[in-house]
Amino acid sequence: MWWQAGGHDAHDPAFGLSLAVAGLLLAGVYVCALLILLRTPLRPALQTVFAPLGRMALTNYLTATILVLAARPILGGSPENWSTATVLLLAGAILTLQWLLSTLWLSRCRQGPIEWLWRWATWGRRPPLRATPKSNQISTVG
Image (cartoon, rainbow, N blue to C red; front, side, top):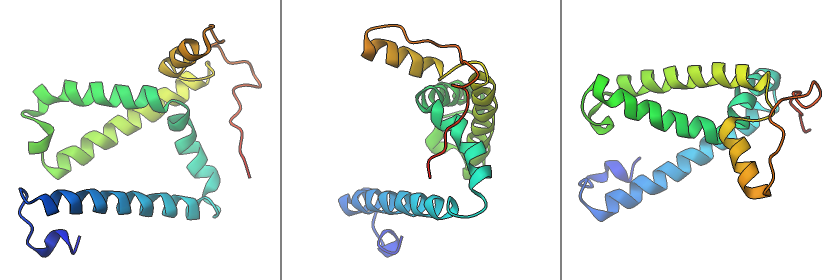
């Protein structure tokens, strides 16, 4: 952030480089913070929140993209012009909806629909979709 605030113009190539470096460093901080939190009593709560989202990561990524594209006409303009509050509220609403739908879907199925199609395409045979009582349990390592 210090490098970015050093007076780089948005059109300066150094600004783009600083933005990329800052993004990677911030992602590293998020990962480290989450790994530290997983070593605390918060682990079960974090697993409850993140496990359904992770088991349907590809489905959630694609549906978030579709939802943001669908929100463009409603919110007006392109996402680059939306306020920070609008972006955060939309992201929070999408994430909450995805968590709810992922949890409900995974109560009946082994993985998300896109993950299922991906396995079918890569394995060359149709995998089971419906969950059996044992396959529905989220395994924990550690």
